[in-house]
Image (cartoon, rainbow, N blue to C red; front, side, top):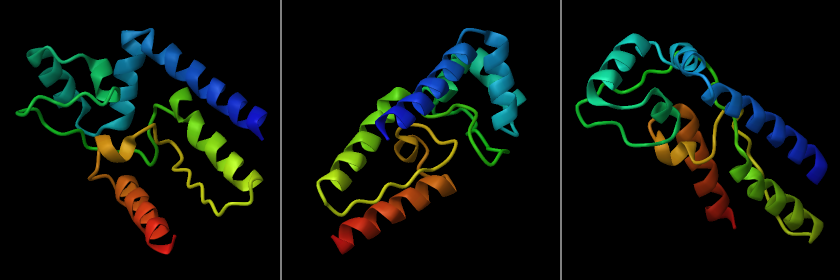
Length: 135
């Protein structure tokens, strides 16, 4: 199981790293993700906010328009920092503990903290609270 997860995460990490090597690739990702991409790109340039910061979790300037998603999944995939939950989950099951692993396809590490208004974030919090209340 560890090898499978490692291979998936390594593949995602390679894809994400390739995107961040090119400004054109980043602009393409922003345009694929957000219906108000052109406005966001213009505002980012005016305010000195890097296009890559849309995917970094950095707080947007207070007077900047919020990104509006247009896709069902995010362009940026999980990165290797999320490997720990998979390993923890596998370890808990091996020890006979009760555990649940919820994967939100296309979402990245800490998505529910960075964009709490997204439907995926709300669903993640519901799952977390439900598990805590039951256990």
